[in-house]
Amino acid sequence: MKRIFGLFGLGLMAATALAQTQVVPESSIIPVGALDNLPHRDISNGIVSAKVYLPGESAFYRGTRFDRTGVVTHATFKGHDFGQPWFSSYSPYTRDFMWKNGQVTVSTVSAAVGPAEDFSPAGYDQARPCPEGAQQTKCGRFLKIGVGVMQRDARPYDFVHPYPIVNEGTRSESHTASSVRLIHRIADRESGFGYSYVKTVRLVPGKAQMTIEHVLTNTGKKDIVSDVYCHNFLTLSPGNENVAITAPFDIKIGRPFAAGAATVEGKTIRYLRTVKEGESVTAPITGFSDKVSDYDFTVRNTATGFGQRIRADQPLARINFWSIRTNVSWEPYIAINLKPGQTKRWTYTYDYFGPGGG
Picture 1: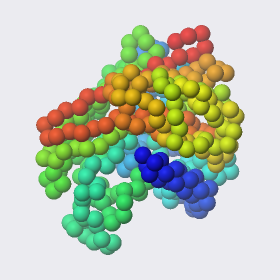
Picture 2: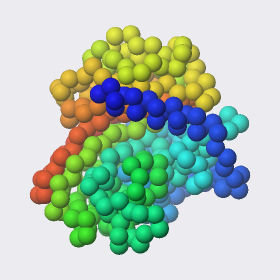
Picture 3: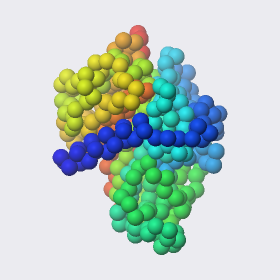
């Protein structure tokens, strides 16, 4: 575990340094507003509204990191938008993200808004490394759930690297006024991977509540071993000032927070000041058990009263915590291990609340 924490910390420090030093052509930078009207469904239950963006050639998200099967944005309750874009623009020449003139420019691979899900690659280490300049037929294949079957290269897996997709599978969609159901199917003979993945985003009638339901069935010949977390790019307070995150267990952090930015008080992480430009408040989180009840978190702006309760019906595999001044992301992981023919179901539940109660 110490080695995992060490690598995680080094990666974060390197990413933070890179975010400050990148040189990106001005002509390649596209304002985030250009994404607003790309294909999506507007859903509402009369209490909460949201946008669910659809996958496809003209999709909001076309990267290879996050699940393309429905990116949820602008979840709004009592006039507060919990899922605003955390970046101002994007560019294919950016690696992950960078700060410039007080604004964030993000890469195409990381240009998602929350809730957005990220599955770890299945079969990457087992796939045949691809020598530099080799033809695709000589390169091994691996699986990213929600994205497709991709071609690996000779290096260790890098979540911000745009891997070539060699099998995107097939997709379908249906919707009601308050829900969107998306289906993604993969069948890849060469790699042996296959699945049926059904994801339903639903605003629950009569409640300030959204659920994201998943049904994943392994239809291939290989085991699917992965995990998934929801990158809750939550926008509650500019600079995250007055934000507090509470868990059902005593929180332990794997590395110190940025000096003076936040502190741990038993079951709560509390920001002590506004997060500065270029600064990150980040750490691996431990202290949880294998009880499903430990996947139950509240993120609140103590000044405004707006907040969100985040739950799931599965035990935690691990937790990462990442935030910069434009968002706070609590990232709980769920393990996936499916033999051919097996199915896994899991549901996230989001409860929204604000001044005067729910």
